[in-house]
Image 1: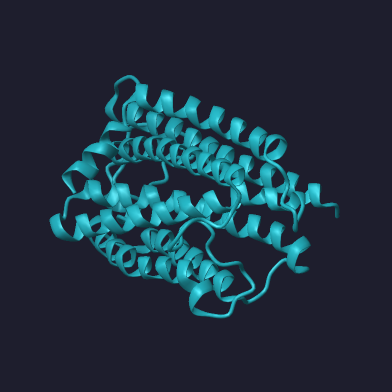
Image 2 (image 1 turned 180 degrees about the vertical axis):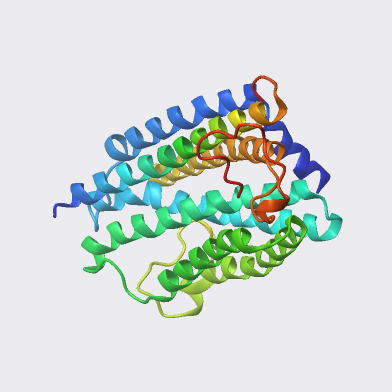
Length: 45
Length: 253
């Protein structure tokens, strides 16, 4: 594999790690808001 | 300690998160452009050395995260206040992500330079151990049977586990290692060219902002999850259930 392919893979992996974790947190945040809203019978938490 | 908590609380505002979010994504983009297209390639290793600008800052964020876990764990053991536990678990999660990323990036760098994806070198082995310690920390939280016990066990691991961080850093000095010695965080002046050092410092700054951003969002998630549900480790029968739970429910860390 060419050197640049390793570099590209590394930068993509970094983007995927940060973006993927942020996306996962967004999913959890949405679920938690729904859950709080349902549990308290009020609007968004 | 109180100032440390106030600083973390300040990150929790929506406005702070929005600013940190923009700074993170813009900063990562600028760092990538500078690292890939502006700063010259290394004379010995060529282009593959450009991985340094993500590998080293990722390791720094992992260390920073575990340092915060350590401080928050001490805070919990000293005061018994649950917000320290929330800070510790939030930081541990981020630390695990960046520690795993560090290992992946090191592997991608090692293959063309050392000729292997992985070797049981002291630096690599102690870093893998660090990942296992904090992955274990997160797993343990799912089996503890009461929130107080969960927080206490976690805090003990958060304090004891941190011992591995200086060992990872010093491993290349203490033992014969394939991995290069520290070039920035070392006694005396850094041993890399000025433009490379400037790019590396930019990457350190951007990755630190990214940590602050992810921490702010994760703390918000933690607060909401605690408000919406009794922690997941409590026995199911004792949990107060909402009238209609959303599909999938909430997974507390």
